[in-house]
Image 1: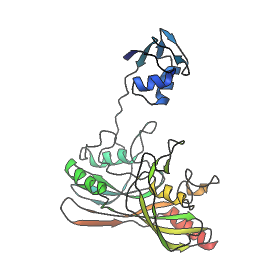
Image 2 (image 1 turned 90 degrees about the vertical axis):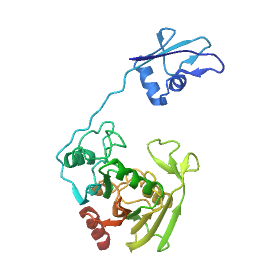
Image 3 (image 1 turned 120 degrees about the vertical axis):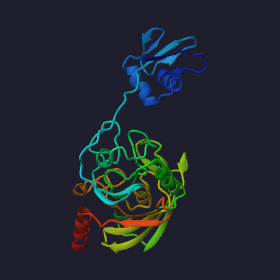
Image 4 (image 1 turned 30 degrees about the horizontal axis):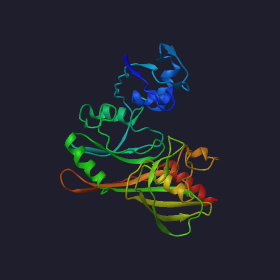
Length: 302
């Protein structure tokens, strides 16, 4: 167990959790947790996270070593659209997480591709995300590229960085959009209050541009085709909610009354295009999945 010792040098009164987070380079929530677990002492005594430090207080922080996780290959069927020695194009189903993370270490796309590819995956993103170049959300279906070696990973990642990938989606959104096409150009960053969400904000954000075109209108809903110019976290979901037309079924950025039968947002990564490491442009598309077609059929009836 690692121990960090420090003496508070005075100044303004400082909450213990703030001091611990800054001294041990932890998030406020992690600092609060180890304080509540009794792993922080002030002058040899356990204090509450709200304790105000005084000049000369000696703070000792006991930090348990981080757990080391390994990812296990699992025989999970995956829909491979294309494969060669450099990469795979995979059609991810709704409900599948792309890579393992805290509390979710099995059943992911990474577990599946590790079984399929063995050791033939790029290692640039570490043991938890081998081969993963980009992600789509758990409840978004559609196409992803997986790199099978570091050379192809770097080559493809440079295109993502330069926003030169072709990435087209289809979605059903709430409401009836005024125009037949449009562009949302609004920066996206972490939500200032709901830290697990993204939001349109000028603070600590990055530029984000989404183009959309109406495919079909249903009155209460609209079927859209969308093209990403940038690729920010939750970009389409945040942008559509920002203009007042959140994606149907979106439990995070949509209305409180969720369309539960959709089991998440009605959003599909339909087309992806890129320059292959061999220098040739390649483009792939996937048909709309059953859940999406069924919802369109229901919208047409209504």
